[in-house]
Amino acid sequence: MTAPHTDLRTGTHDPLHLPHESWRRLYGLACVRCGGGQGLRPGGHAYTQHPDGGRLGWAVQICDDCEHDSKSTDSKAS
Ligand SMILES: [Zn+2]
Image 1 (cartoon, protein in one colour):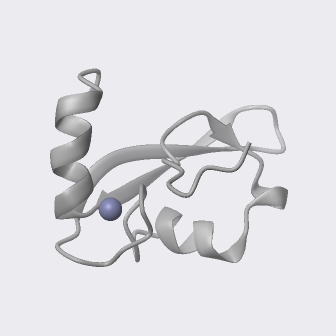
Image 2 (tube, rainbow, N blue to C red):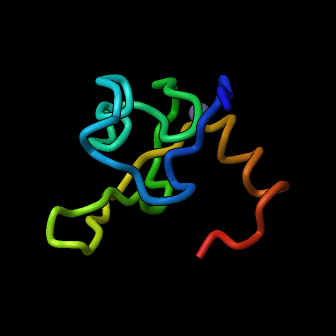
């Protein structure tokens, strides 16, 4: 399944299989949803699997456009 817009906040990701571009999102350098860099603001958390079996949370950023979008589409933001 390939989606042009992958919201990294969905699910728990395997860090060994994340493309470089996804790391920019995890580090908050790009929008967690579309990968853009306009008007970024705190956008919740994304999670990667930890070798110990737990998961690691990343404080991610979201851009203006996706912020509007996700407010109307998913209401379980917190
Ligand atoms: Zn975005």
